[in-house]
Image (cartoon, rainbow, N blue to C red; front, side, top):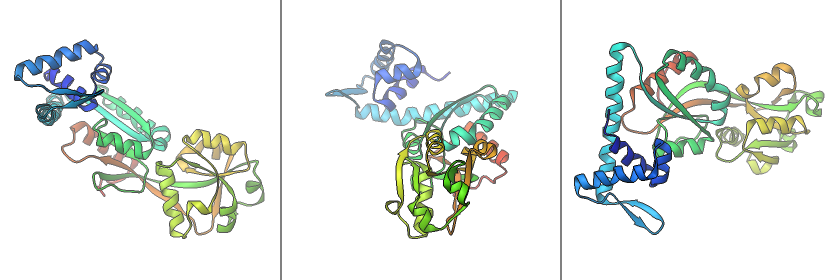
Length: 303
C-alpha cells in the first residue's frame, strides 16, 4: 500500500483542515496530527502553519502537496494495472454529477457498472453544474458529468448523450386544455418556474432564448427552484409552465400528469458531457467513460 501518512497529509492539505481530513479518512483528529508530525520529523520541516484561524501550507508543505498528488495518482494506476492480471478492476472512482444527470440519467449506468466491476469503489456528489466544476477544480472528484452549455478553458468536455428540454404544463392547466402550441409572445407572458442560477438547465434555456433575442428579464418568472422534483410539484399545483429535461419527466408524460407544449421557433437542445481536469486520468475514470459512452451509443470524442 501507499504510505498512509502521505494520504493523510494530502487530505489535510487539500482541505486545509485536520478535522475534515479526519472525517474523510475515518480516523481521529489526533491521529491526523500524529501522521503529520511524523512527516515533519522525518524531513525536518514545518508543513503547516496557522494564520489566525486558518491553516496554511508552508513552502515545504506546498512542495510535498505537489509531489504527493502525483505519487498517489501513480499508486492508483499501479494498483489498477496489477489487479488487471486477475481481470479485476480495483480502485476508487469519485464522480460528481449535476442534478438532472444524477437523478434521472446516471443511475442505470451506475447500476450496471457496479455489477460489471464489483471491486471498484464508486462515490457520487450531486449539485448544479457550477458546483460540480468547482469540486473538480478542487480535486474533490475525479470526473464530472454536467448538462451545462458553457465551457471553461480549464477543463476538457466529452459529450456522451443528447438531451432536450421540454416546455411543460400540468394536465389541469388551461395551457394544456386550450392548446399544445404557444407563440413567442404567449410564452413570454406565461408564468414560469425555472431552475436556479448556476444550473445547466438554466444555461441551456438562456442560450436558446438568446438565439431569439429574448432575455430572462422579458419572461414572467414566478420563482426559481433548486430541485427538479420541487418544480414538477409546483407546476402540478399551479397554472404555470416549466422547462425540464425529457429524462426528468418520463413518468409524468406517461401517466399524463404533465403535458409537453410546443413554442414556435424555440428548441431547447443540449449535450450531456463528461468534464475532466487537465493532467493524467486514473484508468478507472477512462474505463467508466468508455463504459457509459458505449451504453449511450455515443463516440467518446472530446470537445
